[in-house]
Image (tube, rainbow, N blue to C red):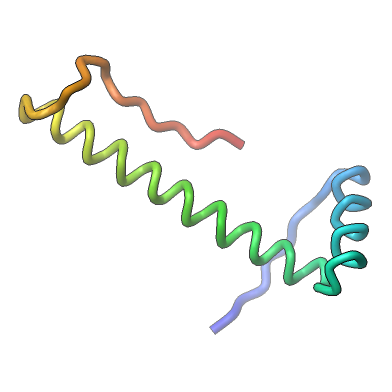
Length: 74
């Protein structure tokens, strides 16, 4: 099931999105949906890796000796 979400883009990003949409033949909405899907997948994988490394650190099973600080950067 798909849902709708509203977002605001600065004019420069919107212009780039429109150019990409025209060049690719995909709608801006399709491109944004794909970009969000990829972003979420990437960030969830990074979070899982950070959590696994933190658990390894806490159990003494880690190669690294530095604390792991995962922070979403947007």
